[in-house]
Amino acid sequence: DAEITQSPRHKITETGRQVTLACHQTWNHNNMFWYRQDLGHGLRLIHYSYGVHDTNKGEVSDGYSVSRSNTEDLPLTLESAASSQTSVYFCASSAAAQGDSEAFFGQGTRLTVV
Amino acid sequence: GENVEQHPSTLSVQEGDSAVIKCTYSDSASNYFPWYKQELGKGPQLIIDIRSNVGEKKDQRIAVTLNKTAKHFSLHITETQPEDSAVYFCAAPESYNTDKLIFGTGTRLQVFP
Image: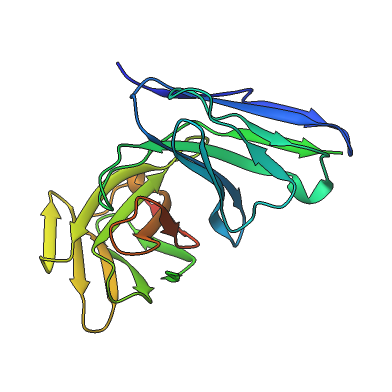
């Protein structure tokens, strides 16, 4: 069965370190998204990609970067981790469908920055 | 761009009662409105969606209604069960025909036996 997986599931890192969260999907979806989930804010979009070599900033992109070298993967990098980036991160993918495509989410990565 | 507001933030009901969660959106051109359910420790999962050419859609105990004039849509859960306890998110595309979803802030539903 097709799926979307995130790794690691839990991560503790120190302030200032570079951290990369992995996202891998086997749906062959063109669209991939990274969200962060914080209490009171719901799901906020960090970065997204509509295809290989395409990346775009979301509403909370400062301090994060992504790259899309193939269809299956969209790693999220925190260039210099800050305590404000402690959160639960979700990756999602969807088929390109001009606005009405189901998004499939990974299980999430809980990141703690100390 | 689209703005989605969701109410209430928490909702407690007795098993067997109905639950209603409401969302408003700002872009009158929006044409797709999904609802996602997030169980503890898991990622959100689509439970029902509605497109702008219909006013209501039902799937067993859940239904979604859409009022395009007022720009709001609602999730209705009837005969609630403890397994309905979860966080529910509404969403809408950022703009017409885009695949980028803007989510509401979520509603934590608790169903008490």
